[in-house]
Length: 137
Image (cartoon, rainbow, N blue to C red; front, top):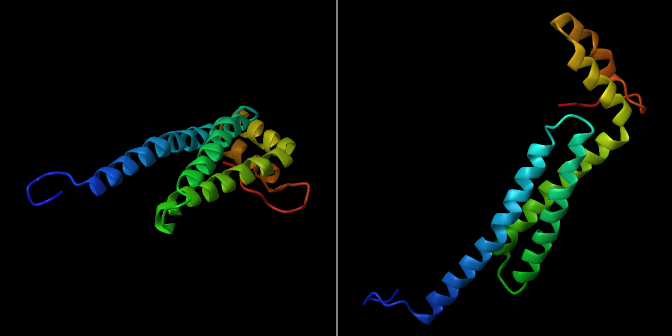
């Protein structure tokens, strides 16, 4: 703003850019949030998280295209969002690979009525086709 309270043309462009960036960023955040929430669903419903995450990837790429001529600091959050989505998608992919083991462990925990029964499920958690230990939420 100028000294007299009037808005300069450059300020109008900055305000318009900020509004457009916010309008493009909000749906991305909502789709990532939906994807993270869907990750807490039981198997196999958990894989529905791929849908909002795929939409978030598409919108993030479009936002980066919109920000093409802007300084790098404007692109930091969309890039970090894409990295976060990448980690979540890799996690989903690993859960798909180890689906049978994960499902057996999840069903064992769901049927366990006591802590001792839940502890009996521990060997299932430690098994994987590759012989290592994997984490399950």
